[in-house]
Length: 105
Image 1 (cartoon, rainbow, N blue to C red):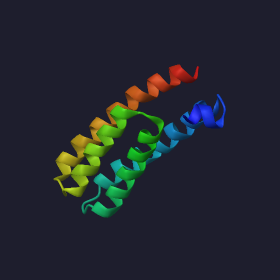
Image 2 (cartoon, rainbow, N blue to C red):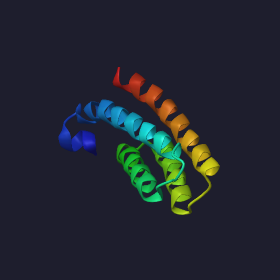
Image 3 (cartoon, rainbow, N blue to C red):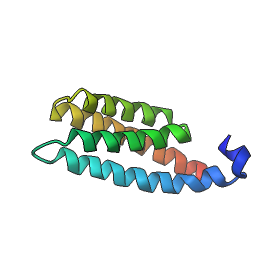
């Protein structure tokens, strides 16, 4: 639908921005989880941000992984559980990024 309403290259132009923003957000999540005291509100905001971007672009596996991380934050899971969920989201991002780079080329 993005392609139809905004021209044939609009979707492709969003991909680099999404990848750059997602990289920054994943880095922010990593830093936040490295703190001695967790700020669950800020963690939730970061999870919601990255999940929303992935969902808008139709990157379903990444959106699901970020949703799992967001749910863990909402449940105030242990730091270890949050790190495991973050690593799953990072792995999905890495897979998605490789596929999107191929698509853009």
